[in-house]
Length: 248
Image (cartoon, rainbow, N blue to C red; front, side, top):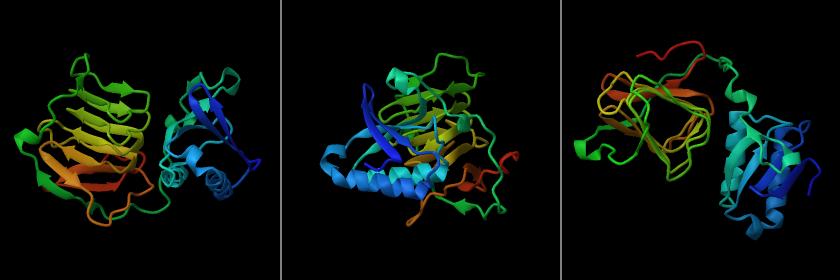
């Protein structure tokens, strides 16, 4: 195995450690070579990426997940790991709490999604309700995994990813400080002022109030943070610029 990557087995599964001084492209190539050596062994596995020595940007996370997808693998978590305790102690990486830097170029023209109006029968019915009052914003400091469903009467903020197969329903806004790839419904049932924000916005399905959207044919998710909202009767998505509230 190349010296600048290491894959170890722990009680929690596979742990990937990346050399901090190497360019990410070199690390990705080294990992591809390692996976190609034993594809049957790695196929279908999930791994935790240790960021105690090297933090990953959103664009780097996307490239990593694309590589793993070729082997039907997935990223279970991207965390700082205390290796001396066999990956049992983890904490959120600093980038979850750091303010976003403004993009180098002006935000592009908002893209319009394929939008249709939801019928009452299409509204979500059976999801886990949060016991707190509707005035509270619900903070979730973990990844929401496939098969998990969360419903809250006010806003929901997630410091982590929303994986495919997960479902998030909020009466207010939904903000994901990570990768959003599950199903989300903001402004349930009829709050048209609600928004959905994410560092990487690529949901399987996105709903706001009574509207449902899906990506147009040939759509590729952007690597920059984005916000979705209702404007002129349809759901639009535009770059989420630091320090500026979404424009309605």
